[in-house]
Image (cartoon, rainbow, N blue to C red; front, side, top):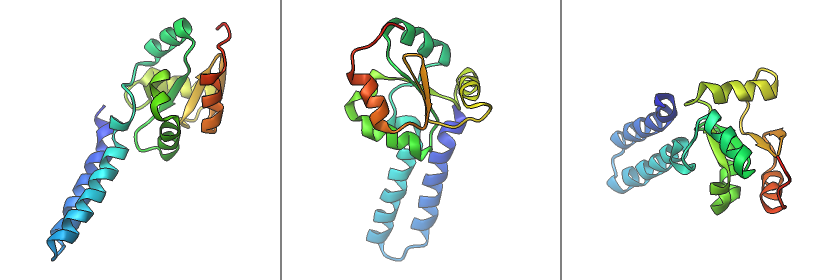
Length: 145
């Protein structure tokens, strides 16, 4: 979990350094707000609560919902999360930096890499899929798993 917050901390630290060099207070405030927004984006806060790989696989087997393996700071994961919007809660999220079994599951799918987002939906895996691919699997009737 510590690594998940590391990027957010780096963004805040950079923001404080930039603020310390500014002569005009309003510029410092604007710049710090930009760095704070980046810190939130690089943190796990913009994603629904992560599960372990075992929990996600068990729940997916029960309810048929897709699993998304992700990590904080990944711009492709952020793009997928943003495009899912309010439907992000219909997906089981696994942070591979917090769960070694999740990282191992991704490596098994990708042939050894930890490329995210990796999505498993109805037995079909896709690495960095287009958001429309996942949205289609959320809207079409689920087939037996």
